[in-house]
Structure formats: structure tokens, C-alpha cells
Image (cartoon, rainbow, N blue to C red; front, side, top):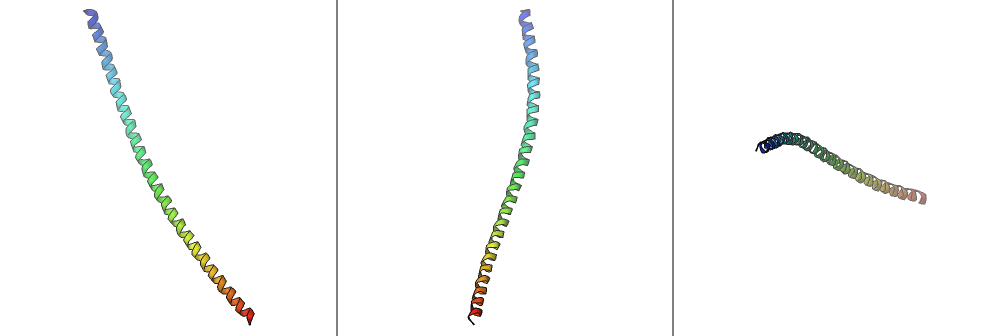
Length: 92
């Protein structure tokens, strides 16, 4: 009977110590999870800002390309007009 009581006391002591360690580990893990959650939120926010900046840059590039096409078209029209004027002056 004494042996059983001693084993029960040792087992209970080990169980309590393991329980405390487990709670401590859980608290550490929860702290780490919270920190990772914050970092994930920050990374997501930064990714959204980067996406918005990339979209703005793309829109700006599209506008610049459109302006360049318009300028090329106008330059071509002016060149054609100059060619016609040159042809007329050569015929006189």
C-alpha cells in the first residue's frame, strides 16, 4: 500500500510539473502566434500598398504610351503635310 501511495505521489507530482510546463509552452506559443499574426498583417498591408503602387505605375505607363502614339501620329501627319508642300513647291 505504501508503494502505491509513493507511486501515486510521484505520478501526481510529475503530472503537475508537466502540466505547468505545458501551460508555459502554450503561453510561449500563443505569444509567438500573436507576433506572427501581426507580422502577417503588416506583410499583407505592405503587399496591398505595393500592388496599388504597381497599378498606378502601370496606368501611368499606359498613359505615356498613349501620348507617345498620339505624338507619333501627329508627327506623321505633319511630315505628310510637309511632303505635300514640298511637292507643290517643286511643281512650280
